[in-house]
Length: 107
Image (cartoon, rainbow, N blue to C red):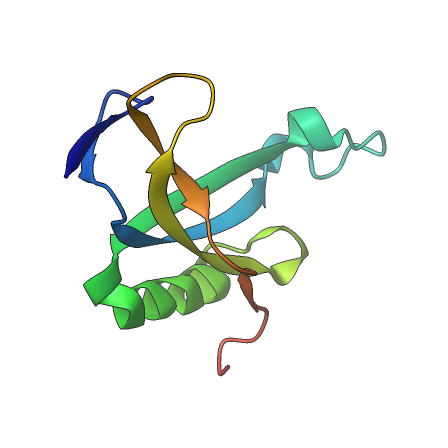
């Protein structure tokens, strides 16, 4: 069944995707001693369909190698479309299980 997500997208109920997430440091703030995690970090992400899990892993390794993520860490989280609790007949992408953390380009 197709459901409207609270982000105004459409997806099949129960659909699965993989979300790659990492944070980068704003380059102009690196030398400042007063590091502010809210202002000096930028959260980034990219999603891949269930059938492209190996592509998501390769992308995560590429990010780790080339994008210099904060703390040298990239995560891959499996997400499933479920019902959005706050509103009737609206879906959401819900994290399913524990994220897979990648901290080595050869993992």
